[in-house]
Structure formats: structure tokens, C-alpha cells
Image (cartoon, rainbow, N blue to C red):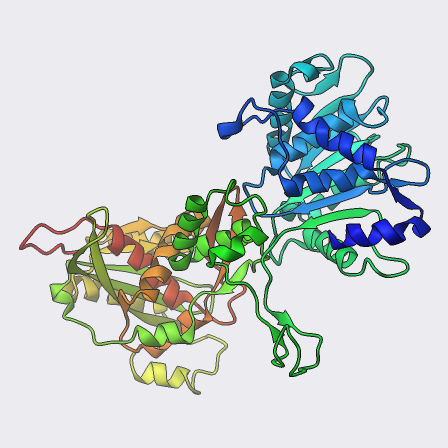
Length: 558
């Protein structure tokens, strides 16, 4: 808003002027021609919210001296449930058949990393076209495109996997969820953003939520648009052809006051505090239409889940606070691990004891992890039993390894029996598993089938139940999330095993968006040191946590 008001006074000298009549006409066009397609407003006229109307007002009202639109790029980033798909679909229809002036032979594309993703906005445009009596007089809707009844204009979905040529002559382009575009999609991005040289007033609109630290293309675009909003008072402002609407929570940042005690922003601390993502008073910053959409109850539920669930917190910050997140996070903080230290109970009284092995790579650590489950007598809201767990680990390493194991902490781990050094570590592990079967009744073991299938088969002949635990995000997300939650809430205990502590504090997790969900997996490549012991523990925890409850008075021997 501040930029718009400033430009009303100063932009004329740069060749820009504001046409109130064109701005009003564009805003009135939405409820006159467009209809909502989803939810409680389906079939009703598309009444723009205040912030949506402001975007349309600026986008179509600002003009160059030749009468064409000033803005050739529009960047909209806000949290989910703002109505991005319907807003983008309506813009595409305007570019197709309702622009001022009408563009002959207009080519409108909705683009995404996959054509299926691009079809989300395209399908909304189809529903909007079929649901509006006025639009049905202007356009024809079919499965692959929307075309004008007169002329040869079209609106199509486009993905990096689409079978298309390079011959775009774009008038309107909608780039959906640009945070998902990686370097391999840069070619498509460049083709679309350079394909409008012969058009009078082409428009590229990007609508997205925040990305993560791997979303390089999104970060470049976001930085350009932030600079346009922060430096609009310059004589030659950056991004003068870019309209940017950025709705997100404020993060903690360095103050420019040089620690002035009289500074109202930081009170002399030099740090401007960020917004609390769990405070409902902050939610409208990222959700300009809140509480109409999203509803308060919805956001409150998402926030509650995020407080206890690492994957849910990642999703909440990104999709509902519109904050950039890191794809790789330190999984366990030292204070959290320290608070979990305690004395073990007698594992013979546990109702479940499970194990897991992680072979590691060549000349590397291999590990056995253990998890014992104990009843607490408590139940959750769904009347499911709440358990507590005790975890431990033991590691193995070949004598030909390249580490200096005569120094700490390696020498201490060897002396204390936490680490076994052997010329045949697989044989040592096998003997340990058989010992645990006899002494601890550990009968059920999880393992990664990629590198220990033969080892598993050799143990199955001894009465061991070896269960495959594939090392992928689909397999890891739920157990890792639950393990970190139970650790935080004091339901997991370790006995001070320093090798296990070392591995636990090394562990970095990798988060990845998949549609509306986030998957989570330990990241061995990025973790600063080995994590095999904690990985094997979490695998054992998984099978202990889902084992059936024992019958009263009986012990399950796993």
C-alpha cells in the first residue's frame, strides 16, 4: 500500500500513471463475470476480498505512457487457503478473452513442475467457465484447453513433462507454486518469461507459498520482489515493472540502528524480535483473508499439531505462516537428549523388546539398536494405551577402518563395551543378536534390505523374525516424527550411552514437501558424523511402538 501511495505522487516522472477507471472496471469484472467453484461459495459471484481487490486495482490500474499495463510481472505469496487457485484461474480467463484491450490470438498458460499440478488451476478455470452464463458466450471448454468462440486464443496447462515445442508466444502466464521449481525447471521458466516479446502488455503471474533452502529459483524471485518493496523510493527503483504482494510472518532479524538505546524497534538490543507463529494474533499477516478463509478452528488445529510434531511444524511454518524453512534440520537438541537420561527398568518386565541393525558402509560403523516398551496404565483420547520406552545401542567396526580408534571418544567406547572392533564384525553382530535372543528375548529385528539381506536370512534359520525397513521417506516419516515427539514429552529414556548420544546429536533430518504433506527422513549424507546407532534405535522403536498389547498376565517375547 505504501508503495502504491508513494507512486501516485512520484511515478509519473518515470513514465507511469494510474487510471482509476481501468482499475474500477477490473475489480467489478470479477463478481460480474466470474463465479466461485468450491466450498460454501460455489456458484456464487466471485466477490474479491479487500486484499485481492487491492492487487487487481494496482495490476490493472497502473499504466505506462503508451496506455499499456505498467506491471509485466506479478508475484503473490501468502499462506494456503487464500484462494490462490481461483484467483489465478480468473486472471487467466481475463487474459484469454477479457483483457483491456482484447489481445488477438492470446496464448495463456498455467505452468507448474508437472502437468498434473498445472491442471489444478486450469481445471478451476474450466469450472468457472462452465459456471458463468456470460463466459459461456465467449469461450468453449474441453479437456485439454479453453478456447475463445471467436478468434484463436487459448488457455492450456503446461508442465515440464508436457510434450510441447519452444514456440510460445505468451500473453498471460501463471506459474503455480514456484517454490517447487528446481534448477532442472529453470529452462521452462526462462522460456515462459522470455516468450512475450511480440505482445503489447504480457503478464507473468507467480502465485506461491514459501519455499525452503533448496528452492533456489523461488529465492531469487522472492529476493527481487522484496527489494522492489523495500527500495521503491529510489530514483531508479528496482523491480519497477513488478507488482509484489507478500504476506508472511516477520522473522527475527538484525536491526539497522546500531544498538541505539532509543530505537523503538529493538530497544537497543540490536535484534528485532520475530512473530510468534503460535499466536493467533499473528496469523492474519500470512493469511490476509483470515478468519473467513482459513477458518480459525482449522489454523488452531494445525498449530496444536505443530507443537508436538516436527513434520507438522515444518508444514505449519511453511504453508500457514508462509515462512521459509530449512530442508535439513538438527533432529535432537542436547538439552532434549540430556533430559531423557535415566535408570533402566528390568527389561524382563517389558511387554515388548525389539531390535534393529544398521550395517553402515564399507569400513564404517555398524550398529544394533534396542527398544523396550513398558505400559504406563494411561490412555489417550482415543482410549489407546500410552507407553514409555527405553533405548540402547551397541556398535561394531572393522579393524581395517581408517579412524584412529586409540583416541577419545573411540578408545572409551571400546573399553566400556559400547564399540566392538573385529576383523569380522558381521560375525560379532550375529553372535550378539543370538545372545540377545537368549538373554533378552529379542526375537523381532528390523533391518534395511538394501545391504543386509543375506545377514537377515542367516538369522531367520535361528528363529529370528527379520522385518524389512526400507530407507525411504514413506517408511521413515511416521516413526521418526513419533520418536521425536515421545522424546520431547519424556516418554523415552536412555541410560547415558555416550556412543548413542554422539550419534543422536549428529543426526540431521531432511524434510521434503509432497503436495500438502511433508515427509521426513534421517539424512546420513548431511549429518556431520555417523548416525547408525540412533538410526537402528528408531527402527527398533518403530516396531516396538506398533506391536500388539500383551494379554493381561502374559509377556510378549519379541
